[in-house]
Length: 345
Image (cartoon, rainbow, N blue to C red; front, top):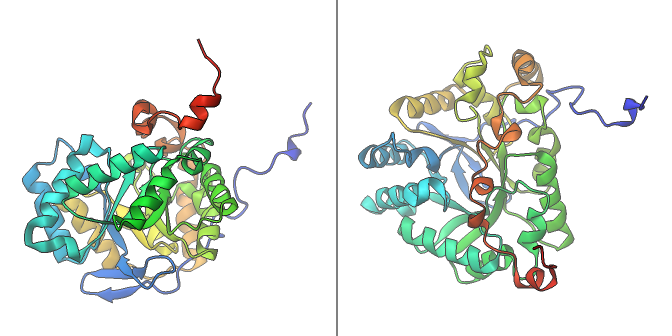
């Protein structure tokens, strides 16, 4: 019989042994503001997710209304992606930001799927055109979901070369990466970057009340980001509403408080109606840094529902894997790989 004691523990002995904030941020009006990583820039602690704004269930007019109201109430961080809703998310956000010169009031981020320099640059230009702007405050390598993604990004002729060229041209200001599959893949991306002497400005990942118990980004990735001044962008606080379907005795406000209690620069929240927006602002209004005992009690309530990752579908299924379903978004292999690769037919 195999000695299972040789395997590392899949879960932390103490789920609440996490880095927490001691300062909620600078409160102005209805919003809290936090530093973007090691920069002096301040961004809203709640960000507006771009995916939901491009859904069929949301009209053009409603998307514009939500973006305008969000900015008026203090949201400055705007999330988006080149592939969201076939570009409709960026188109809607671009139109809304153009009205009243709102573009200059926000920190605008978008993500690119391309793994080659050529594809990354093409996608950046497409995003700039849709968003009606001449620069992105943050561009991110999207969906780092596979262990070979970091090597593809940093390869000769890879997407990082495109990002750096775009930055030199003034099209982007900061560079980061995202992913939702497994924290060990995030660590691989960070290892590859470190080996090549590159420092990411930001990293986006799932941070929610169930993550602490299963393939935990908060336990495995968050400490490194904090120690190295990389801005932490939290997402999937509700797992795109799937966490609510678990029946776990946790309110939306408690779920957002958990994410805000971690050293996040911003918690990106999907908002496709007035309820979603008001819910986020209510959580900000009532947020106070929580002690470890409070977090432990909250995580104890989530534990029975979280151990198998059943409700974190982005980790345990292909439901959220846009680039797996649309591999062409990644582009073909770089020329060096094509030259080396043997015939496969």
